[in-house]
Image 1 (tube, one colour):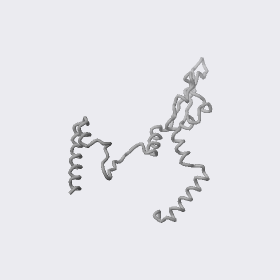
Image 2 (tube, one colour):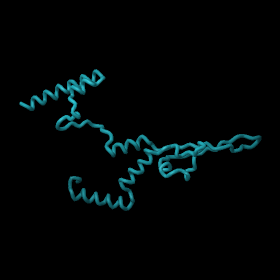
Image 3 (tube, rainbow, N blue to C red):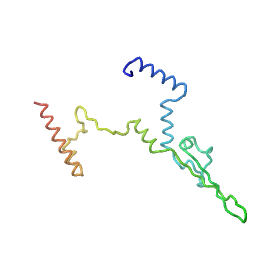
Image 4 (cartoon, rainbow, N blue to C red):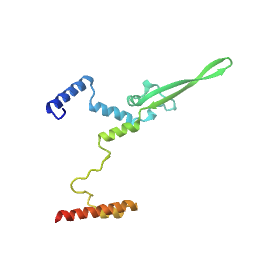
Length: 158
């Protein structure tokens, strides 16, 4: 059904309406991922090393926090338990995953090797590339590839 242009167009219009109604846009999603990816944990702490109150943290730091936990530290003084402080724990969303998703969106990573047309080597021949490689196995692989490319070119010229 997605091959049908009218069906595809109706779905796209529906998605656009939904996005307009909810306010969800590609820009907002990317901005939110950026908050998670680039959050600096130091922004959660005051200069004296104590954790800031959540309301005192900047918006990006707040967005990156998955959970916060506070434990009261108690000490027995005579027959009574007296609070002597707090232990605060903070857990953030997965920064690595957010960076990975942003990298994929901006096509920073190439998980596939695609060859089409001529092999482009920035002016360097495959033989030259093989000569500068330090790993003997890689050198041999590049040499073999260079031989196959040369043979293929000779076959095309005939």
